[in-house]
Amino acid sequence: MLRISRCIGLTEDFTPGGGWVLSELPFILCPMPIRILCLGDIVGRPGRKVVEQKLKALVRDLKVDLVIANAENIAAGSGITANLFHKVRSYGVDVVTLGDHAFRKADIVPTLQTSERIVRPANLAQQAAGRTHTVITSDAGVQVGVFCMLGRIFMNNLPSDDPFATADKVLRQMPPSVKVIVCDMHAEASSEKVAMGHWLDGRCSMVFGTHTHIPTADAKILAGGTAFISDLGMCGPYDSVLGRRKDKVLRFMTTSMPTQF
Image (tube, rainbow, N blue to C red):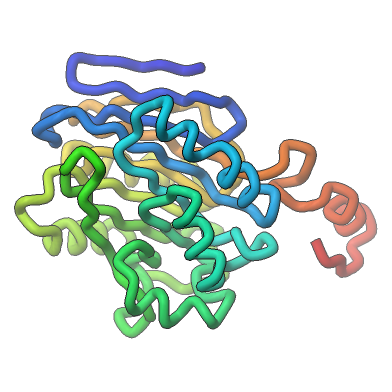
């Protein structure tokens, strides 16, 4: 377990390899202590099952006020459906963030348009379906702003705009009353995620990375008070390759033949 603490905040990685981060957010950005639990990419049925079985107990035992989860891989490893969105909400997830597979399942589009509990990457085209950010009141009575960004380095599935300029735009759109803001930086390159952490340092309470399904060992409080980690990892099977069946991934990598993961 990694624990980094300063007078202004606390961040903990409870399960190395499991993608859980709990952060008691900096007081410079938050008028009262609040505990937010963030989950890395929920991958397919195994990811859904572990969240269903474990999340509510974690929330109770750790006195969590708000749960944020990236769920863009929840539908058979790629995309999210309306039905699975409602399921993950019933498991105890308060806000769902997405990434480059946001629109892989077309039936999620109406939910993206109507629900305040799910956000797509803010730096997609202006005409893209869904919210660029949301504001949710936590169980502690604190308003929390949530948004996600899509990286551009090695990310070719979905064209996106400058995430740094877009992050500035989103922050300007947040109501002045919102003092706690969380950003999910969904990106391939750790350098881009680290850079976003520094860009938002002191302006967001927490910046966490997703997408690679591999947890990083750099959980820290940045100089401006922002809690940061490059990647949470995933909620999915350990005995796998990034949540996919290892035998099928190995078959593809060793034969170059098309294989359904």
